[in-house]
Image (cartoon, rainbow, N blue to C red; front, side, top):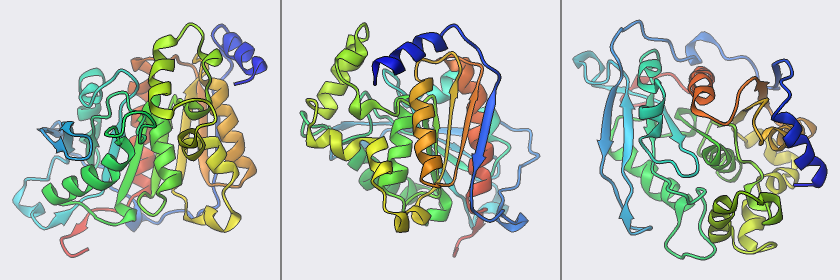
Length: 313
């Protein structure tokens, strides 16, 4: 983060420009058969809590699952559903999305399984300093297979999306870039997108954030920082690998200190001609903003994911 960027972030706290939306995609529009249809059912989505124990990390990492309103109905017994993995932010936990937003209410309109994992303060990354804190491997190697074992999911890329807020937004886009074969859509709300490159000087006054970053990414110029620096990963992508990326979405509030970091990443996506949608609109780094924007993430994920299908799909 440059001195100019820090000055801009301070300015962003007091200025509220008009909402801005940029949609840049070269993908062909999806036909009606590829779009998840909204359900007219009035019920709130059923929420289950799974007390999962991670062998990689060596501790309990429970997760919530929001099931479509028709999931347990006899007519849907052979039906498989796409899945959205929704990640929490720093200092947060797996139950934040259900407790602090109306996610369960919003989800009832979609034929979509939503999973909210526990990521603690691990930045969804394999820690450079704590060998057992393998939060990237946990998501890929343990969580997703466990969800697929327990629920009727579409087990291909076209039926899987990932999104999150702040730390979770960083994690979601990073998964999209590092594991493009696994996700059709990756979304970020108020993402801490420069996390792997931030220095102690950048975070003066936010020592608790720096402590989590130092524990996960190690010292400046560490290999862990280099392999998890989202902007670096995107800049170094070869042109022939860009079509394999998931569709990317990112947004940020105009009163959010992370606005410039989000703008910078959106500029990289634009320059590299990576299909994406970027939005900036009035809002702060707080739950009212995320409660509003998770509705947009659900809408876009529903458009990009494969529709529910029979058991042999």
